[in-house]
Length: 406
Image (cartoon, rainbow, N blue to C red; front, top):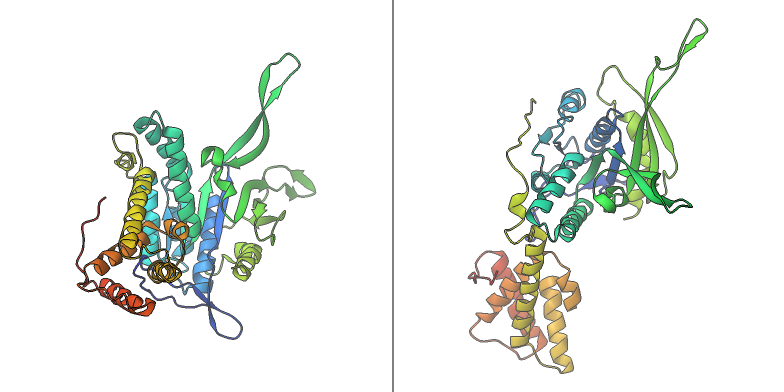
């Protein structure tokens, strides 16, 4: 059961693959991307599990489409040879250990038509934390939270299946004894990325990995720690409820053969199905960091994007007020119809929440409308006809570009 994906083009979004599978009636339907977090100590099988799941997604639903990995720890180069090569899946690895590099990698994977993107978050989180503290010492907490929240939103909104990998960290609480002394007490575990935000809260499926070494039995004797290894996955969260509370044991393998992802896939496919019902040699590049994302005043990329959004929203309101400021019932209907035609929403509040690129497109269309020599205001229909012509002209790349105030 597979469907070969082909590139599509949208004027407001990067070129990505339409994610299609086929139901029992052989009708194409859209795939809802899955979002996973896998965390645990070193060597418990986080990367291998992620790669096996990614290989299953690629082969079962996308005809062997590419898989991408952002890996500053250089652990993904091994499954490139052991898992993806036998499956004839192109596995692209990026190794720049920075937050800025990770964000670029995700966008590149989307444009390249990959079906799955994986990222090892530990070193990237540390790099971002150090960079923001250095560049924005007086406001680093708010800046860090804003930048990380922006990443989480992209992770969840991406049309790719996304997998975040991380080490395990302790959740602690303060215990006060009778003398008032405070002691830190471990109350749980979390994924070691995202700080107090704990990245494990965000994905739809969260797996806590551990390693289990079975006792060896020979000649009636049992020797602990010398038997077969199992990679154990505890489902800490499944928003679909399909796998909540389950644990899976996947035996370690001496080698890999095509289709070897089946053990992991059969365990996790219940989550995938429930989501659908809802809705070579590498070297580590250490020459770059994320300082370019924060200006000399300590303001980060998120702050600049927010400022740009505010300026565009004000400009859009000004353009609409210039030509459609009437307060009569028909005037208001015209304004709402224009907003829906350009932005796909009826209210200013909804428009303000749109992607920045979509706001810029709408502003340039309004600028194109301003350049019309004679505005036909006879009726709502005549206004919409002229506006529709401006949209078509802009999308063909034929409208004159105004310099924007940002």
